[in-house]
Image 1 (spheres, rainbow, N blue to C red):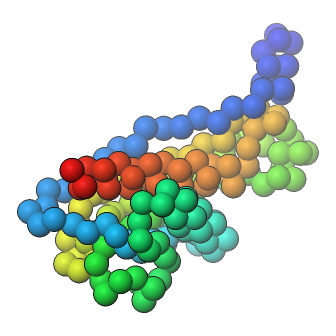
Image 2 (cartoon, helix red, strand yellow):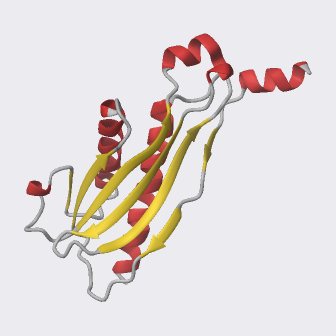
Length: 169
């Protein structure tokens, strides 16, 4: 009995759910030179989380050096050529740093579930719809809401990079 409890209190894990994707067939080639990222949520009180997720996706996409322009504002893109990545936070369970420090593994697991719709900026046609989920571990040293957001952002970026590779063939 003591060993499982100690394992839970001392471990540090982060888990990842697979991305569920529904590609939409397009007959026209799509430019991915410019990307506009917009994060929304029907859930109240998530301004900090929406901003953090949006910023992480933009930063990680810029870090790939695959795209000419990545922005949260369409006015900063090249004449409407590119894609829009609309991210909607569908569900979130927050775990703050101080909760993790006080309660350890009993603070629970931070999770975030998002749905992403990728559309062509010039035509508005859907290119792909997919979901991603970030989870922190449930141990005493496990991550917080920020860790779950970082993981979800990484999954979104990985899917956009994969989409870019498919369209550049």
